[in-house]
Length: 292
Length: 279
Image (cartoon, rainbow over all chains, first blue to last red; front, side, top):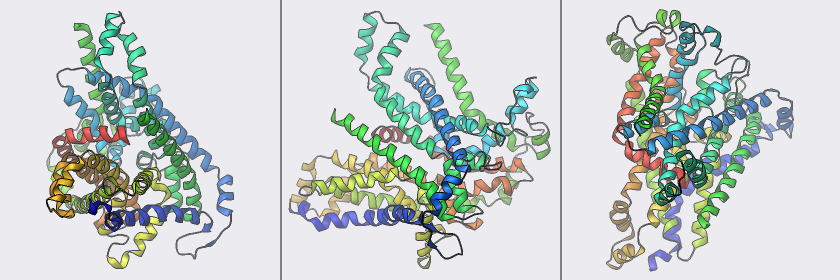
């Protein structure tokens, strides 16, 4: 077809997307790399800073804390989300009355604004006016009450639990889709061979679900590294920078009191490299899957 | 068999209770006053007074918030669908001689998912500053949709290209042979054929723009221009004298969204699964 061959038509169709891509993705990435070598603050002229921002990074003791908290949130989510969403997926895969409703309920938090749902969670986990500590005290288990947020070290763990609550519906739906792809004959054959239900789950379902579980792991890690909204609403990184994760720290350095864009870009570089590396790994992983 | 059913329903009830508890507790809190919230965190409200909702509605500017979010989400959705549809068509179809070129753009657009928004906040702020003379600058409702549209590119490309490639080529060839123009073919033949993909993307772009917080928080300054999540992040300070009002505002904001989700539940869940497994 002559019209398919015209290169200018193709370029014309690509042009709007390409413009948006260059202005809001390609240029910003390049610009961030440049900013890492600059003193860039609000209301002061930008000038070349050499490696000063990088030197600051290694001297900044808040960065290791933020990295540690990010790791806790990410690992905590992995430990919680994988088994729980697997169980929920198995459960929802069974036909029963009210199945659709339960699926709907577990999915609700995922489509709502994280800021708003965290605002509600604040009134659950806040040590003073939260219902969790209040409830523990009222059933004479006050000794179990903890400073769930804003204390010395518990905040990232609480955040991992809340983020699990937010996303579990999504992951269990992914797992359900994976379960539907397993041929029923496998289970029939296993039943004939005398396999029990736990055996079938362990030796059949989990190995056959490996690809889906891999995808879930990658998503959890990529989103875990970028966790932001829950912390911003609950503690905003406080007290005294103890509960920052990498995303909130970038945000506070760049848009908080300091407005230090150069240094913020250096911290952002860590996150950029981590996410880029993981994504490239993930892409090669899925491509191999398609080729097989 | 009977026993396992009992366990099944117990498990299901437990999960539903955990998932719903925060929302139900939010409703309970919305009827309490500050004295009750601070002094007896677990108590139920003294009086279920719905007039409180009317009162909070009048004090807060919820209608403005909805208007702002609606404008941003609508402009984003239309813009995102339009540019992604065109470029995806170019990638999926117009590549007989330049296959490598199509692949190049396809993977380039997809790689944008790997750029965390936190790494490019400052440059986006600068770009938006530069667009000020056009009325699309910082602290303007019309400044927000453009970066959002750019954010829709990887996902839109993935879904549209997948959908377009599933349409048989003969369909288009026949249309063109019959003298149909390229644009008419695009919008009158291709579009109806990929309607499911189109609706999925409409919902996703809309939801994405509706819930976005990070960019909104750096690009907006004035309360009158806030979108919903942006305003919600200030509720705690705004109503600091009255935490019940925070919950009332939150619930009034959530209800329309829940109705939206209820109507489009099948599309949303299916779309999430499909793209989750492909992406």
